[in-house]
View (cartoon, rainbow, N blue to C red):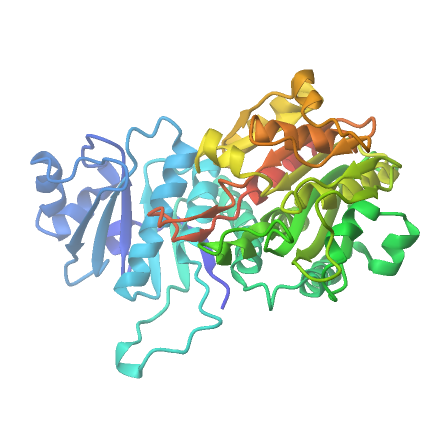
Length: 491
């Protein structure tokens, strides 16, 4: 069931809701609009704040029982210092929604002193992130163990600005939820064909043009790099192009590119068994593109956007690519395969070359590309590389607005030396030093003349532990960054 969010100018004290969530910054005093609510609960809120029983620290929670009228429960949630109100509201709202699910309430109301358009949008996204769950493959609990599911939320903020913020936040949340569901699905269900079918559904809902290439079509396009990865499996590889054309006629499009490895075993250069099940998340870049295209269409942005996805599975078999093989990409360059686990860049090489036919204004790709980026930046920031400083700054700004921070990493010419091959134009792995940068250097060889940025989301597309505001699993990154780039460019 879709999670419904509305804005309302109702008074907190009179609202008939199972749960009222009140978001407060560090060292709070009682907001004036909550004075009637405090009176209704015998002054408990004011006393708790005066005694510093609740200090408003980030992620802090304090739970009250309501009075006979108005909210039946009250949950205080801390925003911390709220130096970034957008990020603070989004995080606190995610925590609140997760708490509501634990309590088994079907609806909640959200109150924050920040109630403009941006704050309402952030709260709407956060509430939807926290309410989201993936139970498709779980048997239902026994009737006596079941709790009601959180189905809706009301953001207590009046006016057209808040209503617009909630509407936009809901659209962003739909795209993120779509991406998270794709990523959470196991690799035997989320196949290249399933990803293509999901793209067709998006195209059908929003009137987009869609093109889907299979093995035969890619052979005709001489995509030997992409096909080298796909040759080890009987599944059809898929190159998907979604075209959203709501901008000026003839205006060059923004092109979003996503790596869609539905499962990555490493191929002949097989990965260690421990934790390999997480390699179903190797399609998070593709999920990000599809989620972004869903949101861009829901927002009705006046812009031309093309979403490109390269999807296959990387497995060892008797016909898999081998270390030492040389293949030719569609732009004519020969690639020596040093490591079959450096397969995502082989897929993206042909997809980035394919992007040139759209005469793009800019190309931004996203991929769970390297463990080296996780070592460099952990799970906090996305690695950002590119050939155009203006576009890099634009993408970094978009990531900040989306609460998906990035960090600019270098593409020094010396890194290209590490990628020299004895038998081909370039090899697909330069070894461990500067692994995230050499992977990006490889991609740069296939970008043509357009402005380009690469997002290495290996550390940010999914969480290996519970983050508080969302559980372990897919985060939805980079949907928000893609959407904010498009919003910033829309006329």
